[in-house]
Each structure stands twice: as structure tokens, then as C-alpha cells.
Image (cartoon, rainbow, N blue to C red; front, side, top):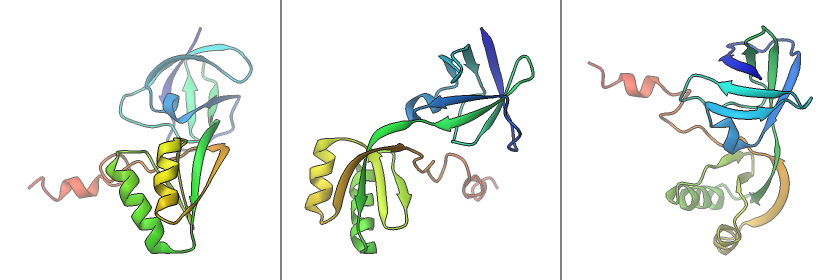
Length: 151
């Protein structure tokens, strides 16, 4: 089984593709398969979520591109920024991973949450799409916030 052990800092030409849903892209240890069917084991540093487009290095030197799998998600639409903010607040209050786009919010499909969001006045569509939720203020990309308290 091929071991994948390193996350590269920059995109590179890939020798193979690994398509994973969001839940598996959060794991640092995982046995799975490349899109070609070859068995691989992820043995990556802990604490990083893989994103579509990330590149990994396998133990044999090959570069593996990560792709976000299509998943069943709910996408809530509104042209009203206040309605979107209100829905994001309520979904976040339930600790739901949330992807934010221009005029829309996306979360893992859940019919109860769909009804809540519709009740707030947004249109909700269930669809197959890649899911790339926000990483959060303290999980990647915002480390400078923590540095304010180091001194």
C-alpha cells in the first residue's frame, strides 16, 4: 500500500488524483484509494483539513492532487445579506460546518436544518456539490489572532 505522508505548500503537477468527501479530508490517518483504484494510506500531520487542489507527496515521490468529492449538501440562497447573516448565525450556533459564498450558504444536507433556514426566509436547494466549509477563526489562516495574547 502506498503511503501519503506530506502536504505540499504549493500546487504542483500531479501524477495521480485522490477524491475525498469533506469528512475524510479532515482525517490525518485514513486507508482509501486513489481515483485509479490503487490502495493508499494517509499518514499526514494532524490538525489540517485537506482542500480541493491541495497537493500531497507519497512515499514513492509521486505528487497526489486532492479533489473535493461531490456530496449531498443543502445550499441556501438569498439576495438579502441580513437574512444570510441570520442563517449563518443559527447554523453556526449549532456547530455546523458552513461554506459561505456570494449570496449563498452551504451545509451538509439535513432536512431539519433545511426547514429552519426556510423559516428564516431563505430558499434552500438540495444538490450534489463539493463541500469546502470555512476553517474557523482559530483553525488555519488566522493564527495572528492568537499571537495577540502571547506577550
